[in-house]
Amino acid sequence: MLLAAGAIFGLGYGNFQSCAQAIALKGISVERLGIDTSTFYIFLDSGIGFGPYFLGVVIPSLGYGGMYEVLTIVILLSLAAFVYLFRKRKILDNA
Image (tube, rainbow, N blue to C red; front, top):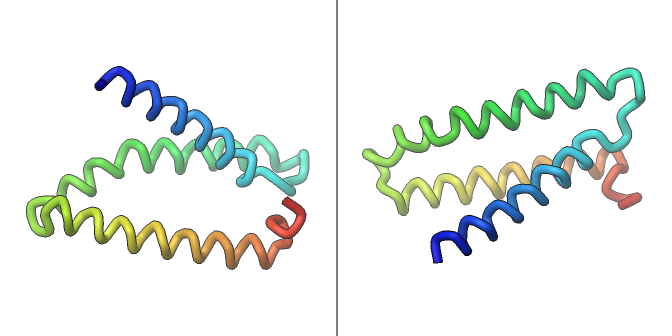
């Protein structure tokens, strides 16, 4: 069961990473492609590296349930910001 869960997680993460990179770099000029790709990976690696540390600091005070509630709010706010910013740039309208 653990191996199956790991395989499913790996497939989902691999798909998410490539889709997120495609969305982040869509509409970028060729001159800025290298800079924007490296910026994407810097923030991706920072989130993967620092995210568990900061969430581990939250758990003693809020517990796991509180941590998931905070993450739900963060995800919803991020989704709203994404839709607002990308609709403004007209990138999602062409997708």
